[in-house]
Amino acid sequence: MYIPPHSLIKDIQEIHSFIEKNSFAILVTKNNGTINATHIPVLIEKIEGIYGTLYCHIAKANSQWIDFDKDVLVIFPGAHHYISSSWYETDQSVPTWNYLSVHAYGEMEIVTDRGEKIKIVKDLVKYFEGKESTYSTDNLRESYFEGLLNGIVAFRILITKLEGKQKLSQNRSEESQKRVIYELEKADNDNAKLISDLMKKNLDG
Image (tube, rainbow, N blue to C red; front, side):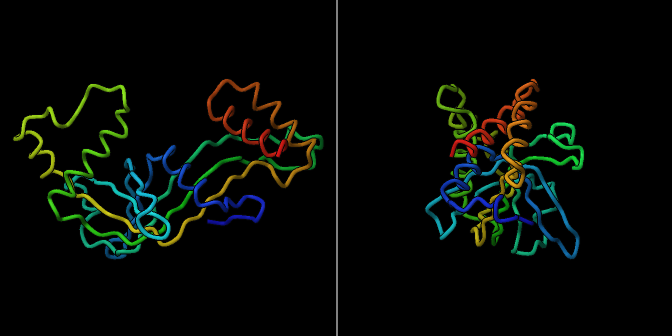
């Protein structure tokens, strides 16, 4: 991922936090020369390995797990919003897009141990259900849960490289950034609010 110095997220803890908050990711693999991608929820174990380890699973019917190269990419998209040239103090500019994203490169292997596979499934469900949820895989019939296990392939991805980017108009003048923030705050959507809040934080910092 191309990252100008002013857009680089350097702090690994900040990147880990971003992954946790934006954990519906895109798993990209190469299978016999063909590029494949699947949108999946992913969990990170931050203290496993130098950069952390990712855990996920896909449907066994999804052929992406067959004959994959061990080197993979997992993309974690974040907030994003279109930035109009009309928002700047000059018309000698071009429109752009402000956004946040993390790319995690790693080595993927299939989890074959049944106990570990069960743990991955339960941890994923527990994390995304939240503390207040009454749902638990422990309440599923054994035969039903076994059928679910047989229908998936679980993975472990040891992260070998992390890239974090936050493109927030840092290369523009302070006046331009304030104009962009003003326009974003008028937009009625969550992405605009997140981008504007981060831009204000940058200016205040």
